[in-house]
Length: 118
Length: 110
Image (cartoon, rainbow over all chains, first blue to last red; front, side, top):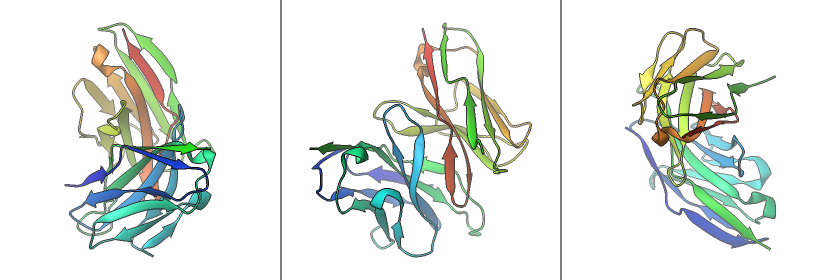
């Protein structure tokens, strides 16, 4: 079984300050991990993904995340927040199956709403 | 390059009515999913499919049925709509690189 816990339901930052959105996961096998962003009344956009290559993953719009197996974490960071970053962010895990070749179903965290103040 | 397309985008149903939501993808993905999104609850998996002709239950399957007769299409049916099914529904398809989502269907059951 797999699960995802996003540790903060709301995060508020000032424009130009760093962003940290926290995610812990549980997975039976080697997981794939993703961060998605959803702007108000919009669909979901893939920010970045980890699929067992480099543990530090760079995504779009200056976001990055680090996969830490020992801590079962995949926190999302950005050095300097922009007003356009205000949105809801979802951490997602997918088991890759015992053989490592199959692609499992996605499990979403509850979401973190990021507010950016001028 | 349409990606994942959901129809309709909006719908209002009366309690007890039925409807079908259509999801179509043109990326030749094996996996397809239906999620519902409710405030404060993230996205919850209703049903999913690992290939043409196969379906499986997710976290919240009650009150919904699905079919995957063609690889590119994944249909979600509500046989007898209830107000508790008021939600935003997202379809997705996926491969190893991630999942791609449709724009969502906002369904209101009155």
